[in-house]
Length: 317
Length: 253
Image (cartoon, helix red, strand yellow):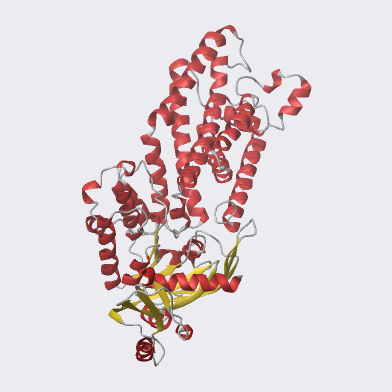
């Protein structure tokens, strides 16, 4: 089967999942992942991130909906679809009694690939595991076990790599190594889908962001666009003389008096044509409020994420 | 067919056996040797012949079946339960392997171990008791059929179990009693008529009878019936496993 290289590498349409106990984990998910992109799926605990990943990977059955991976239906053409995916799970599930070398060889064989010692050696060297190849997995530290899981996921040369909370419980060094490797994989054309609680990582790494809450995909957007559209800037004025309260007539500006009356915060939308800053400064001057310093800051992805989740909760309530 | 996948599972499982050699092989062989010493030599020498066979020789097929059943169930159930317990089953479920390939890997490895053990016990028995095998081809056929069928049954138990206790309960409370009451140590013709009838509901009777026939040419129930019952149980187990993988019962939900 010839696959259109411009088509999405993952296409999910109307995916729902209700667990046996009646819990609705996913609601009508529509999602497209482009080839070669880094996609970050964000959401609070229990939002449905792992369920969605598990369904795409074939670990959990969807209640309804269709998913294709590299043009192959994950149910009808499960062999081709699953062969394209490598999964690094959230939990450190490892074959404790196996050696590192045996367990990565097992993974490669399980995914239908002929043995290839030079390739596996390269994977282990890239992950600084080569010296540990004869060690039993149970003797490794948590960080090293995480590396083993990554090596196992890469053992069959997948087109898509799922990283489910890969930074959980790993030290700074491994995190840096991991993100370096992710960038290299992306450069080679591998599509990366990650979930993370470290939103600054998503901000740093991802091309696109998806936010899921209570089983609903509430936003999927290019990271830069998302930050431009939903990001807000804040102007902080440090006052020359602290004040106890804002004078009457400034209510319409939605100002916040902070730091015991020493600063005034003004938030404005970056998407609007007029920021209102010149008018604000003039109005403050008219009210005799003088300032000695000003600085501006921008919303982080985390601020946007929190705001989206709060908004989603508000709509649900 | 994902042959590399089957090989990976099979080799993984066989490696587990050789890693736990004392538990997998040495312990059952030693235990069975004790049976031969106690029942075959010490007690057997004071018992008469059964159907012109010495008691020591009579119990050999039954003892091999006892081990074959227990080890097949135990190996296969443990093999699939461990990834469930350790969480590593995510890799099996996300791999491009079909249910039949998973079965060939796990059940094939479990049955291989059981057959190895059965042959070892057969060899050990020769040290204690002289015997001959009248139908060696049929003996191998019964050995393989039983090992595969009960490995499949063990695989189902491993899929069903959600605790180590459940994993042990079927072999301990069902398989072992059925084997002991299935004519491993006696001929069912030695039982009172009513119990002879009741014991025919025990599927293990057919296994032991058929296996003993392959050794000595004498059977307590018709050999064709023995083959039919074992094959029927094999088909039943296969159907159940097919349904489990089709619906995702207990594994994909």
